[in-house]
Amino acid sequence: MEAIAQTTSHSQLLGKPKQTGNRSNKSGTIQVKIPIKKLPARREAGSTRRGSCISGDPALVALLLPATNLGLTSAAYPRFFWYSPQNTAQQTQFSLYQIDERSRQRTLLYNTIFKPSAEAGVTSLALPSQDKIPPLEINQTYYWTVSIICDRTDPSPRSVITVDGWIQRVTLSKNVAHQLQRLNPKERIPIYAEQGLWFDTLSTVAELRACNPSDNNLSNLWINLLQQAELVELAQQPLQQKCSRR
Image (cartoon, rainbow, N blue to C red; front, top):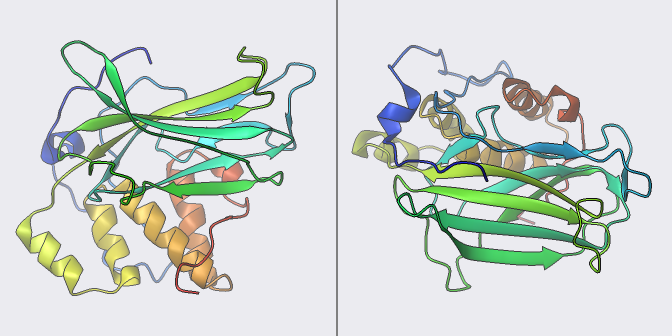
């Protein structure tokens, strides 16, 4: 982590309002208003070293974030997404930190280690609300990392591949919040996109895709989102998320 993110309001992050045409997602396209603010991070990382535990095409680990390395959410406990290639890794580690703007110190809020799938695909993790983890604070920027650990006895870069990025929770106007309450998940997608809520948009499309895998419109929406994030090479990779309604 090279720099600290300063607290910025929702409107400041998105810049001047403009028409995006997000009135319908029937065409399989949507335009998320990506924040104009860019933060230093490494959202993609691969390994060219002999003996690396990752392979395939693309042989990289990547957070599903815009190229600004920052995604917005309205959720107190959002879902995070990343891509893992074919691998023989022993562990995956996910960590979330709160950053003090003055001291630049980071405080670990959540950390979990688990066995990754050996197959390539998009993995997701929802921040649990049952483990005494405080909800994300409004207008607070958080730093998150994902590490693929080839050998847990070797902490060196040749064994640990780490990617990092940022998330900020923002508040919605009362009108927008009331509007969302009246809509079903699919109808909320254009509203999330218009509000610049990358995490909300991505997680809603992912959940709908998981529950409706044969819906081409949802598949096209997913591809469109990853194209906007300049992650075209990951657009056709399988989504490992399971439908929560089943």
